[in-house]
Image (cartoon, rainbow, N blue to C red; front, side, top):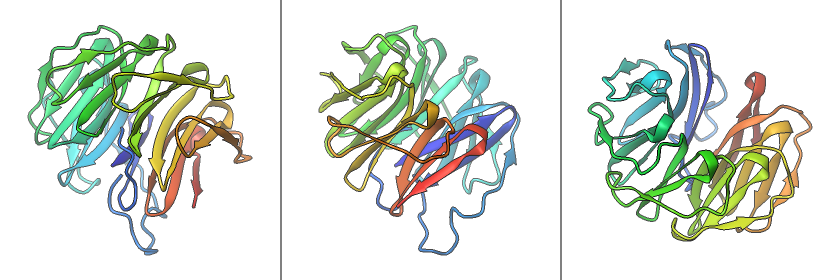
Amino acid sequence: MKTFGLYEEGFLAACTINGGGTGGGSGGGGGSGSGVGTTWTLRNLGNPLFGVTYGNGLFVAVGRRGTILTSPDGVDWTARTSPASNNLNGVTYGNGLFVAVGKYGTILTSPDGVDWTARTSPTGDWLLGVTYGNGLFVAVGEVGTILTSPDGVDWTARTSPASNDLKGVTYGNGLFVAVGRWGTILTSPDGVDWTARTSGTGDWLLGVTYGNGLFVAVGGGDTILTSPDGVDWTARTSGRGNSLYGVTYGNGTFVAVGYRGAILTSP
């Protein structure tokens, strides 16, 4: 499951897509040409929200000052008590557990999205993205930080070949892929041993997903990169010129979102 969020002061516009997407990270009921994903509604929820995911029949959104919201339908949202006062930047769901990460190494877990527990983190650096795949949670963040956990509770810092901030991470086809500032791309088959890859761009990469046999990374300056294996990357163009902040895959379609509400799709 892959999710993304668009956020501005006090608003959330989010999309989750099910059906065909295997990249996790930080997607939900794909339709069959019935208009799902065509009409969008902006919900006013208060604090800025920086991440959203879906699991076990529940949407969970996280954001500024430890904000946690849940919704069974994406329309009606309930604020939950958070053990964190720091910004929460990313959230994912895997193996029956929600995991949220954020500022100063904050890590929270919940089995139901309602009751949350703060976990001990091996870093004080900001964590900016989190995913689940192959029985492992992987969180990434500032200065190349990479953490892994088999259960969301006990976390281990991993050696990173990057010193740039890592903005996003996904899993697909037996491979974790993390992306970040200045075109940074890292890959790992197990979340432990990571290799730096050549991206061909110096733009910031802000989001990454996997679907239909393809990794797609997006970022500043309308950057779109694709790769069948996470190793060799090809630059694509949309011709729109907007920076792109997130990307997901589901129901046979890649969806990228970005500056000034840009939403791009690719079959």
